[in-house]
Length: 271
Image 1 (tube, rainbow, N blue to C red):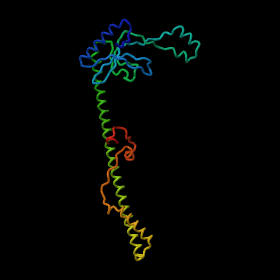
Image 2: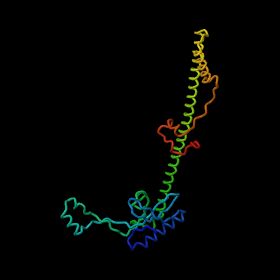
Image 3: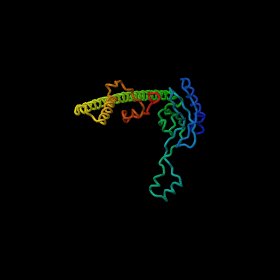
């Protein structure tokens, strides 16, 4: 179904023009499709549309009859209503009428702003016919397709750059998590070493102070303390690189700041 909005005497010409346009488009290797556009808030029912697809970008077309602006002749009813109403009501009588004038035009559906109103069009003119301008219309569509493709590539590159930056931030956060985890482990070892040395120093001081004459309770306590010192002393137990913490979203969130952890697929398996 071809979207045609013309007076009845112009239907045959409009169909011939659209046939010529679509034939030329197909000869250039473009896809042509008639389809139903779904209903929207502005429309209760689906609307038939014709689209040409160039480089993956679709361009809807319709053919319609142009109008000319002519002075409006108030109807008797308008005049009667104006006499009974205020000055504001009289101002509502239109000054001009838009009358179909037999000139044809092909353009994007003007009632749908999502396509951009008349980004590409051609029409009958004072010195040419619409039939002679079809090549110009296809050239304009091709230009729009090139612009749309350039914009798509630019947006794709920008998205890829954002994605790459996001993964860089995640990797940096992971390295910071490992660094802080190791630093914490080192600080714990240093603290354990200080405590172990302090315990042994205390035990030695107690024994020297009493010249070995210790009560049973004191001996038991010192033995327990010295055993604890041995158990926490990293020098006696050996030191090694601690295992890395799991790079979960929860663990990395403190290092990421305002960046979301769910923007892209998580780079660590099963995390």
